[in-house]
Image 1 (tube, rainbow, N blue to C red):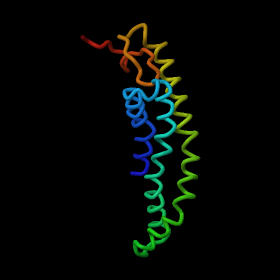
Image 2 (tube, rainbow, N blue to C red):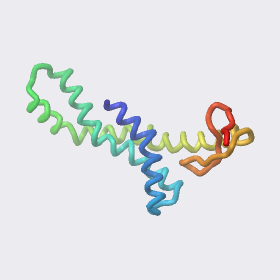
Image 3 (cartoon, rainbow, N blue to C red):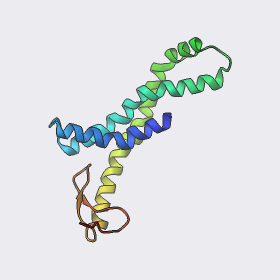
Image 4 (tube, rainbow, N blue to C red):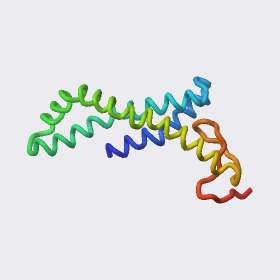
Length: 137
């Protein structure tokens, strides 16, 4: 569950958040995509850190009652969350931005001559469907 939340926040949520920011005319598309890609994975750590700490507590302290578990989670939450945010920012924040730029650039170079152009939701660069097939219609 914890890893699914991280993947959701790293790969799916930034596009939705960026589109929302653009539609509300808060930010331009490229800036909205970058900010969403930085904030979504980091922000999800606020939710996923307690799940992580609960799992560690179940493993390391079997047989204690839930009130003791939650007290341990509360005591460790701030430091653990800060550390997890610092760890995830380079990988899924900056790395996600770099991956999207490289993906869109290379997809435009490789697929554009043979595909029906579409718009990338990240950078507005044209690319066609994955798999090398033309779209009908």
